[in-house]
Image (tube, rainbow, N blue to C red):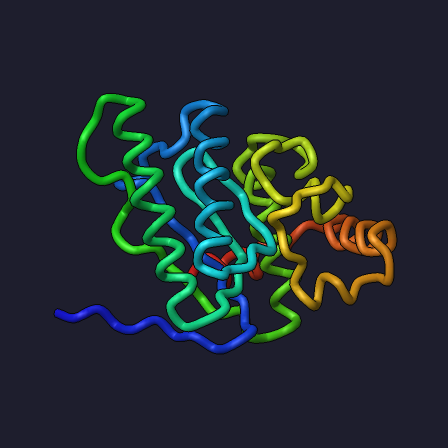
Length: 193
């Protein structure tokens, strides 16, 4: 059965999820996460994708990104996946697949959903009980988006930029969005896409 083509709409971000095969771990050490982020940065640049938010969990990854063309995001994910699997298999003397099939993606076309998606992604470690505050988790974009840490390869999405006319104003407004977390209904809707 042929694969369904992915939908692309110019300037519309996509929420991308890639899970470990059988939900097994994809990151065991800080080195693994750093290698993944290094490969991600290179693939983003090579394929013309803008990354807005991310989180690396032990057995899956969430990315909020916008591709420049219809093929940018699929090519970026293919390059990232292949290179990271090669590293991972060499590092742990293993063979075979690491990822659970193709990555999943969903257009984030509704502007009201964009910042909700940012929050869903960056609150993942809190929901998983890995930390109590999103700023405590090292492997996400929260520190850049909420605390103003410089991450040159993150590209703020237009709605994020509209939160304020300076970095400090945007960070303050963004941090306030996290005060109430996300309600379970919203979390369930995002999980079912």
